[in-house]
Amino acid sequence: MLKLASIVIRVNDLPAQARFWKAALDYVERDPAEDDWVVLKPRDADAPCIALDAHHSERVLPPRIHLDIYAEDQATEVRRLTELGAREVHWDNLPVDADYVIMEDPEGNRFCIVDRPDWSGWERARD
Image (tube, rainbow, N blue to C red; front, side, top):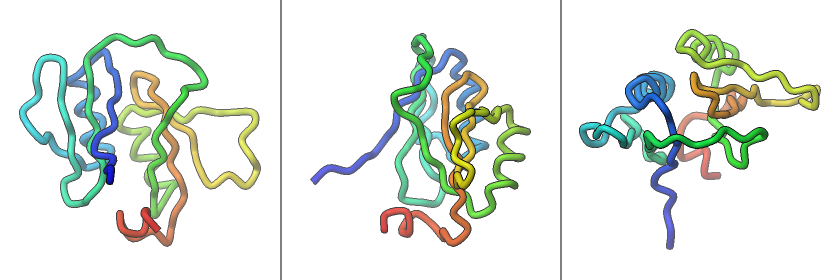
């Protein structure tokens, strides 16, 4: 049996990216940050950790992998994340009825905010 425990994101500015992702997801440091590594864990949920690796990596578009983050109030979360430094990504091929908004963190790492108004927590995400 396997369990997805952590998703690693390569970053250039570890302190800034740690601040962004902690505020974005309400995560906390699992252990004190090192100079080039920090693992952020959910404050109150059984969900995967986000590990930030201060190691330069070329940005490739479209990315081969991205995060889907569920939101009960998508519009509010998109505004909040924008205030934290994220940017909305406009894509010409976005379906008219898309239930997601494509965004990127302050360093350009992509993620989607998926509209899930009936979602009430991590347990439902596994259904």
